[in-house]
Length: 73
Image (cartoon, rainbow, N blue to C red):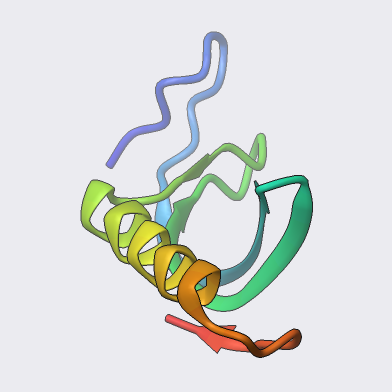
């Protein structure tokens, strides 16, 4: 897919990234998140389904008593 960043002519490529999320005033880093990344400008696109899945994981974490989680999508 062609990059949508103004003045960028790159093509997005599928790869995995580490994605940080602030949830309830805490920062979580989630590894191995599938994303499309432009090699020219670095723009990152994460699919809506992936974001919904991450939200689901964070909601489960909020109900848990545990204090440390490592997530891979």
